Structure formats: structure tokens, C-alpha cells
Length: 148
Image 1 (cartoon, rainbow, N blue to C red):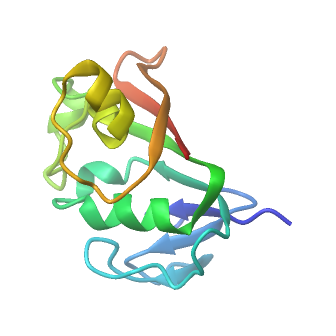
Image 2 (cartoon, rainbow, N blue to C red):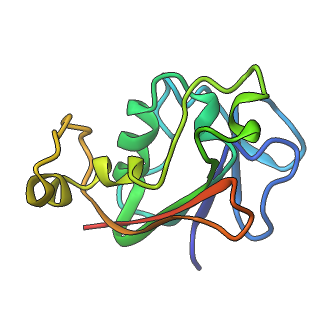
């Protein structure tokens, strides 16, 4: 059986996923603050980590990136969607504290950073960037990272 997490799922956890949120909504299996707390899941046991309109609410995403990498099995996928920086959808919500464009997710791939002469900030993760693009809506960035 595949184990898939929906980070910051709120009251609408994606079907077939285990909900993770800071609030105890129905369907949330793990109630914790992902900025500061570890996921209560064994390392290398998760097949997919999904996040929809959650990362923009996290001021310090280091723990989210580190924990997603830790719990994913080799070949596992960290994917999701965030609002595109510079669009009204990114800036109108006063709870948004971090902004993304398609290039942002390259910074979580150390090998890409080295090849592209980008700085590596030692995220304590091992991801390969598979996709990061603006979707057809024109205001969302869709990303896919694979655990090496």
C-alpha cells in the first residue's frame, strides 16, 4: 500500500492521502506545526508528499523541505502547487509570507544548483527537479521534485 501525505491539507484532505495540518480538522491524521516539528513518520517510507497552496504560508520552509526529503523513499515524489509571485493571488492573502516562481524549486536540487552556478543553501535534502512551471491558469506554479 502506498503512503501519500497531503501537507497543510486544511479541512479538505486529498482522497487517498494522509492529512497533515496545524489544525485538527476532520480527516487530519497528524496535527503539528511543520515549520518546527518533525513528521511522526519513519524515514524512507512515504511514496508521495503533496502540497496545495500551503508553502506560501510557511515563513521558514527549511523544516518542511528537510522533513519531506527525510520521509520520502528513494524515487518518491514531492509535488504541489503554489501561487505565482507577482500575481494578485499571491499577494492578496495577508497570510501569505513567502513567494514562488518556477525557478524557486531549482534551489532544492543541489546538482542543478552546481550545474547552473546557483548558490546551494544546504537544505539537507536530496531532490532532483523534474518539473516547475506556470500552469494553464497563469497564476499557479506546479512543481515536481523526486527524491534521489
